[in-house]
Amino acid sequence: MIRPQRQTIAQEWTTIPFGVTAVAQPISGSLGPSSLITTLIFSVPITAANSVFIGPNSGVSLTNGLEIPAGSPQEIRINNERELVEIESPMLDLLLALTCRRVQSDTVPIITWDVSNIWIIATGNTAITIGIFKEMWS
Image 1 (spheres, rainbow, N blue to C red):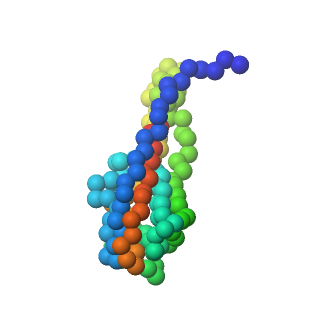
Image 2 (tube, rainbow, N blue to C red):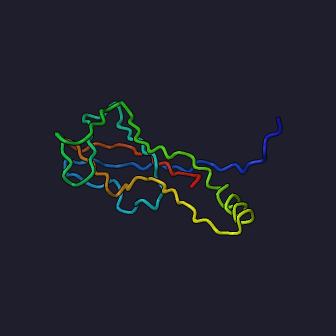
Image 3 (tube, helix red, strand yellow):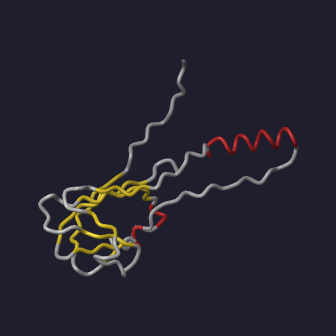
């Protein structure tokens, strides 16, 4: 079987140290939907005295947030289905040649995290690390 030659693209990702406090704060004010972030990993060291809690706004609290316990990294991921958008243009060109009329294409959105709307809080000062992974094929 002959495999096509494909471009290799390295996954872009970074880690950011983050100091969580007893006052809710956004993870990042600059990473909006156009940053194409689809995966985050929250790592609270096993030696941390506190869990941390995440939520969708500044109202996140210890009672309504999603808990991330110490020593148990948690991943939140959006799975965008592969749509093979790279073949859309050649297929539309072929259809134009066969039917002599242009066909409107559908656009498939990509769903990403708005990291500026992920808020975090803890009962006390807690140092964590957040891994941020960008969608690569969009």
